Amino acid sequence: MKHTISVLVQDEAGVLSRIAGLFARRGFNIDSLAVGPAEKIGISRITMVVEGDNRTIEQLTKQLYKLVNILHVQDITNIPCVERELLLVKIHVVEENRSAILDIAKIFRAKIVDIAYEYLILEVTGDPGKIFALEQLLNHYGIAEIARTGKISLTRTSNVNTEFLKSAFTSKNIVL
Image 1 (tube, rainbow, N blue to C red):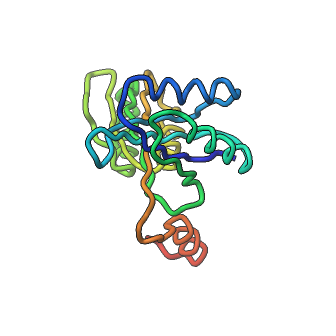
Image 2: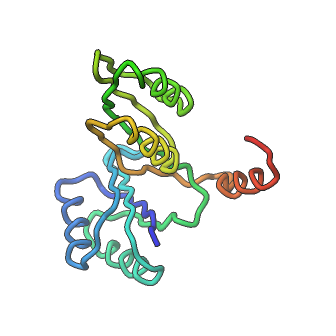
Image 3: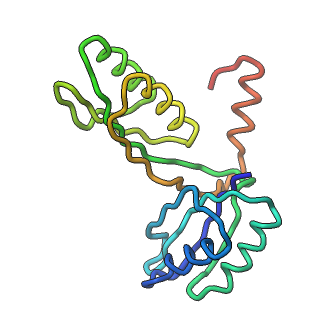
């Protein structure tokens, strides 16, 4: 199972390297990694997606706390969260498929950030499922290049689980 781990760290040289080293020593691959400043100056938030069972992730969490500069570690996999990724994708465009690609971009609320005769670049943000779905659709038209950020995530203070609500409304044929 994939787990999303949020880590608050003191923003000092080498902290990310120590975390990556901990995962490498234990044979874990980090599927997704995003790092950026947090709400306080001198603090950064690291959001990682790693595969493992609950027991293994609990052990990793304990090991992370042993590292210097780690302030808080939380497995937010089963906590209601807002999750987003950013995707930049360069697509090969020919006259016959230009309107179809633009329609797809509109449906996914993607922005055209560069356009040329044979290529265009789209920018889209959204939850990982949206990003995956768009990527699958655009594969049909010929993706030339792709850049995708790691997942970023914050827990919902409201504790409202929108994934649960989506499935509940979908099963009753109600569109959100």
